[in-house]
Length: 507
Image (tube, rainbow, N blue to C red; front, side):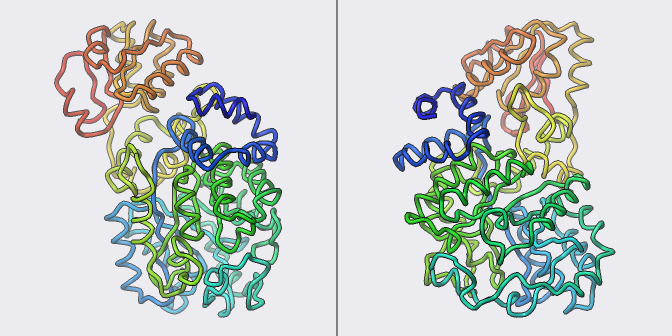
């Protein structure tokens, strides 16, 4: 693996594919190879796997709005606010159930109301065999001793364990099957598969929830801890691969017991970055120094929250600072802006970005994107595409074409030379659909690396000649019988609108 990593750091995509396959067979060996790298090399490797097409080069904040310390009006306003910002929502279902009880409502009745206030994807966790889990007051009102103290986790400092109020859970079990209608993903904790059975649901229940989410056509996120940064971490990653987890969520902070916790957090991010099935690596809790290094190493997503919510202090603070009074969201946004040096998208991603991805996914269709559509051994898109496509946001967006309608036009015109401007995943989907009907596909992208890897990969895996244009869009148009602008970016569509034999994907 060492030789593969050396070649990857020199920009070799073929070695990157090889390392992914070797890593799947032996995550332990891959982790050992990562430990031999310098901090700079580790960050470079993680960034490589974060970039197109192996990973997801988006950075986002997921926001948990719900807290018993807030009024219902404040909670509703929070949902409206994050909707305007374009941030996905993370919901702890036990908190929704607690607020619903206070307001004289059922858990699903309240969640349905809150869901109507945002178009963005919603992820729900603390969801069990009966639906929303319910906890006693000493857990619900946890004062964050573990995060504030900064000590490696060896059990709750106050002796609390994963106690449940199953009578309350059973009382609304008839609502369980309704929840997948209004959420895009259900997240579970895989910590019980690593070491910590006292602070997570039992493995059998976790597996049943994963199966439930899959049966309902929803995505699955999973929380794993850094643990000892060695075998405990590997066991978590192996469980993620075994159960096809769409979004790997890494918890550091007190759940990072490694001797060099910052380095171990970065290694966890890169290990997940290489092996995560859905190409998304997130964190639900960590200290500020872990977060900063994790972002350098390719972390995509950070879960934060509004005041009174535990995610508000679990991300972005140092020991001694992480208290329940914090409003962590603004600080997390600033840390991301400071640490993500370059990105093709705003940092963090906003509503405009979400709409572009949702349109792209809607154009290609569910069958052509992650977790179904591939070219060779690489998925088209990532879990974000699936989550956005199944969200209310996508329902409200319209697209003019599909790959099928473009193929009809290609065959009707007898096109043999097809041009594609933009070399990312939309181009992959169009090329895959059109390949049986054309003799040559010409691709132009302003990003030299994107064009190069797309030309090589499509040329290797599709039954058609694929040629690059060196970023020369005019050459691409002039040497093709029909050219498709493979983007929903407004400025690109405007640039090419009205040109003869050029197709724009949106009116």
